[in-house]
Image (cartoon, rainbow, N blue to C red; front, side, top):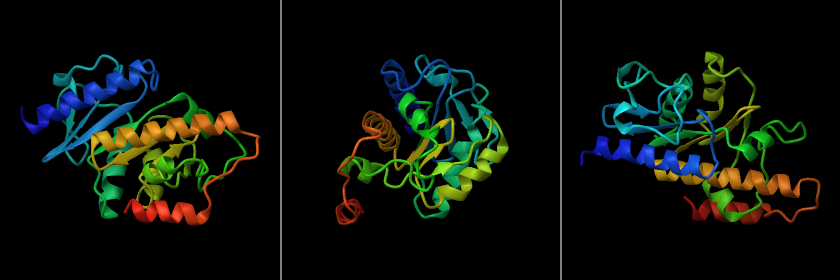
Length: 214
């Protein structure tokens, strides 16, 4: 199997797993993966639960469609993440964007810190996500959202779009999927515990975890 065929199969397998477990619904969410000479993206209006590997959108690095179905209207989010993370010296192998319930719920709370929405509740959240800034709201498909994402993506591989959902870049598709699922589970914990006194990881514990995860 070629590297591209393997990437197509992986996108569809991980997408279906996320859909089946309720991490996305309807035709929401999109997943992309880097190739040697471009990238793959889930098509517009498609359900992550029933993707066809042969119909995934194949694009170049100018965002032009080379083959497959019409790409997600949020393709510019992925392109912004690839470009800005590459400029930061951490080129992603994949980007995942979901409208997962608990992450979206956290994105609409008025009393969170927009510089870092979720607190360091668990070690795995610190290692897989780290700091989570809130990107200001723009309507889905608005190109201004890409520019807003660019302002954060050079410094953060995980972002939370206000009133929308998370977008996460990873060194591989598996890494991006793991990180966005950790984000969703942490958002769920945060909402369950919201309003109660919490014992967070302290600054030294967070620094130690980041050092171990380098």
